[in-house]
Every structure is written in C-alpha cells, then in structure tokens.
Amino acid sequence: MRPLALALGLSLVASPAAAQDRGDLRVLAINGGGERMENYASHLAHLRQLVDLLTAAKIPADHITVLSSDGNAPAPDLATREPEPANAWLLQGTHVDPLLRDLTTYESSTLPGVDLRPATVTSLARAVNELRTLLRPGDTLLVYVTDHGTQSRRDPTGNRITLWGPRESISVARLGALLSRLPPTVRVVSLMSQCYSGGFAYMHETREHSRIPDGSTCGYFSSTPDRPAYGCYPEIRGQKAIGHSFEFLSALARSGSFPTAHTEILSSDDTPDIPLRSSDVYLAELLGRNAGDGRDDIALADSLLRQAFASGDHAKERNLVDRIAALFGLRRPTSIAEVEEQIDDLLTFLDVVDARARIWEAALGDFNQANLVDFLTDRPAWRERLQHRALLSLSTPARHARTRELLSELFAFVTSDAMRTLQANRLATGLQTADDIGYRTDIRVAALLRIRFVLTTLAGREWVRNHDKEAKALRALVMCEDLSLPVPATPPRMKVAAESPSLPPLAEDLRRAGAIRPGWIGVTFVPVSHGRRARLGLPEGAATITSQVPHSPAAEAGLRQGDIVTGTTGHPFGHPNDLRPLIASSKPGQSLDLEVLRGGSRVVIKLVVRDAPFGQGKN
Image 1 (cartoon, rainbow, N blue to C red):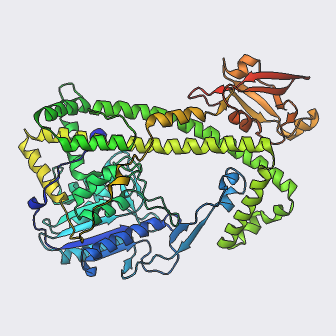
Image 2 (spheres, rainbow, N blue to C red; image 1 turned 180 degrees about the vertical axis):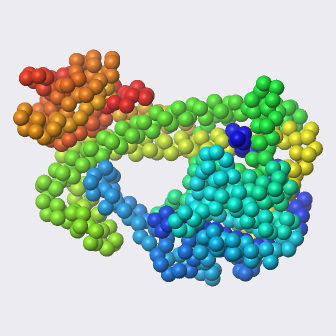
C-alpha cells in the first residue's frame, strides 16, 4: 500500500531559462462522458476553451487530436440543463419531483473546425499509435482530460478515466502502458480534471517501468487519488464556468506557463478541487517512506519545515499560505500538524451540518407533499395534468412550461396561509443555509489541503538536499512540468477581485449554523394504519411513538412509547408525517402542546423543543 497520507505538495518551479527545447508540441484531448445523461455540456466547453487557447498559441490544427463521447456521430450525446425555475424547492420530496424537475435536454457534440473522434479504448489506442509515428525524440505530448473518473481503493494505479459507452474506461496502469509505445524521450505532460485524477501521477511507473521518475512523464491534476473533483458538474446552461480545468486554462491563457498557472489557481479556484502535480506526489512519497525512527510522516515533515524556515526566508511560500488562508476565512497555520488540527475541526463541524441538512431535507419533503395534496384537492383540474402518463407525453419545453405554471400557482397557494408560510420559510431557509455552509466547509477543507501542499513540498525539498538520487529525480520532474505555450501577451488581471475574500470568516459560518438548528424532541414514530385510524376516529396524520431518547424533551415531558400523537392543540395532523416538519421547524426553546391518545384517554403533552445532540437519529 502506498503512503498516500502526504501525497500532496507544491513542488519547485523551474525558471523558464532552465527549460529545455522540447521540439514540437502535440495534444491528445479526451472527454469520455460515459453516457449521454452524464456527458455534461461543461466538458465540451472545456474542450472548446482548450482548442481556443491552442489556436491562439498557433499550435497547428493537425497537431491536436480530440476524443469526445461518440465523436462526430449526429445522435444527441451531450446533456445540458436549464436553470431551475423560481420556487422549485416546493416540489422537493414530492411524488412529481422526478418528473417535473428533470430539466435536461440533449444535443449532439460539435466543435467547429475539429474532427471529433469517439472516446473509446479502441479509438484511444489508434490515436496513440498514430502519434507514435509522428512524435520525434524531444517532442512533447500534452494529454488533456476533462471527464468523469473512478477510484480504486486498493491502488491508485487502478483509478480510471471514464470513456464512452458501457464498461468503457482506462486505468492509470493501462494508459501508462499505452503511452509506453511512444519513444521514451518524448515528454508526456498530463492536464487532468476528472475525479480522482491524482492517481495518474503514478502513470510514469508503467510508462517508464520504474517507481523513480526519469522526467519523461508528469502532470497536473484536479484532485488527490482519493477525492472527487468538482469541475465536471456545472452542466447548467449559462452557469459560471468553475473548477480546476476552467481556472487552469484561464490562468494559462494569461501567462502561458503551466507552473505559473498551477500556483495561481491554488488561491483562485474557489471550489473543493485540490490542484497538485507529479512532483508533489513524489515528494510526499519520499516523506512517507522515510518517516522512520518512531516518527510519523507529519512529525518528520514539520521537523524539516523548521529547518527550512531557519535556513532561508521562503517568502513565496509564506505569502502563498497567508493568501490562501485569508481568501478562505481560515487561521494561518505554521505547521502541518496545525493544518491537520484545523481539518479535523472542520470535518467534525461538517458532520454536524450534514446531519442537520438531512433533517431539514426530510422535513421539507414531508411538508411539500402535504401541501401538494392540499393543492390538488383545492385545484382538481391539476390532478389530470400531473398524471405520470400526461407528463411523459409532453415535449421537454412543454414539460418545463407546465412546471413553471404549477410552481407559480403552488407558491401562491402555500403563501396564502400565514402559518404555512412561516413553516415553509423556516424549512426552506434551514435546508438552503445548511447546504451553503456545508459546501463552503468543503471548500475550506480543500484550501487547508492546498496549504498542506505548500508546507509538505517545502519539507520535501529540505529532505532531498541530502539525497542526491532523489534530488536528481525531483529536478527531472520539475523540468518535465515546466511546459509553456507561446500565448499572446495579455494585460495583467485586475487585482481587486482576486484580493477580495472568497468566503466569509469561519466564525461567521459557525454563527449562521447555530441560527438554523432544526428542532428536536427525541422520538421516532410511524404513521397509524388506515384501519386503526378508522376504528379510533383519528386524523390521517396521526403518528405512533415507537421509541424515545432518555432525558430528551419527549422523555422529560412524559411522552411514552405507544402514545399516538394526533396533532397540536386545535390543529389535528391531516397528512402522514406531519409531525416531522412540525418538530424540525420549531426553534430550540419553543414550546409545543401535543395532543396524544394514550389507551382510551386523550391528554396534552407540553414540551420544550431543543437542539438535536449530534449523532441522534431521532426527530
């Protein structure tokens, strides 16, 4: 098993003057897509951005080979989604949600001026064989991938790029073996943005037949071998281009330098992507393998960091750490141990936020379904219009129009009742806020990992000072990574936006999370069966308590297993699971008067809602 805990880092940047003349540049670009439902329009947008950049750099068109989904076949193979209509959350969790919220349309992939080939294993092998006859010693092949990817939990060389069609994919080891057909002195530089792309940092092992890199194979990747990437998901038409591939190519268009672009996006990419390079992985492997004498790799790295900071200024690394921390609302760490501590704290916080989001989501789904049932009772003409068969018979534009019409009327119906409006606002706001905080927390974790990269690489550089063989391999990798494109000179990017914090301070998110805590009383329940409701004369939403948490609000108020909750005082439950949104939308500290049937008696249980203790799986 490889020591991946430190498979991170920001490696040395070779100066342009040190770069060798690498001869011609050829490009092999890949977007597999898998199948049309997953072949997002963002992938084709990335290919278009790449081709535009290469054209501006005057790379000849016959030097660019593009494999994309089904190639030039006219069948619709590209998924594009329209933005969600206003108030789409009103359908979340309802029985019509899957039918009405599918806003995906399909079109055929086209890239003007480019002959698209199918992204299959056979087509890829054919392209490599063609390149084998075209590439000469000293030439460079850029392998660009914008796609989905899968992870092998046992070995990162088993990570795969998704290609086009059922069971079509290629692993790190297989792609490395395929590229080994090229002359060994051809430099292969990868730029990959698929999930788990960091596993391809090990591609040199099968191409070069050695664990020690010789500098002929290297790359830039969107994430570590064990983490997904973000940039392949924004398939919504007109949505801001985001993620590793977009940020890297945009930075590359400004400087033409791959190392410079990589360093820039460590702070400019405001997604949970984790940019890294082959040299980062190599240094991390060295630290992991040489952390003997009873020390773990973090202790070794931090001791080397202290040596590095004592022996030199390292202002660039310090400034980069400060910049990332400031932009993402974090404390500036001075050691990898401090980075790990902050990550652990954030992951604990994220667990709590995710648990609350699940409570909000379940409660909102029950609330929405109850509202839709009431709406259809009040507007019976809509029943036929929402039948499964009727919706499937509509064209995609017609179904979108019906969705917008339904949401307009449903929103007016829900907000016509003051109590319903309050509950809707509480549930929808709680879920949206929890989701937003959760996503920002993912970004903060990614930012800390980027900081970890900077510190890990600095430690690794300190280690190789006394190890000539490893230092030689590192120099070769850095030289391999030092790829440049002759892009036209562009004005410097405006600094104002870049200097503005990407995220609010962490303390602000902690405060917001405390303000959207769902209510909790500490029970589980099931709806009462139809027959029993009829015998006992109970409302449709009556719920039987099946368990309770000791010392919870329910237990302290005397609510027992077997009690049947029929509603609140004067408000019987009219729908199954009405109890869940009532509890969740109640603020901690709020009193609830629950009407309960116990045996043959009806009693009122008065309790005070509290915040759910973390880990309690009850309402």
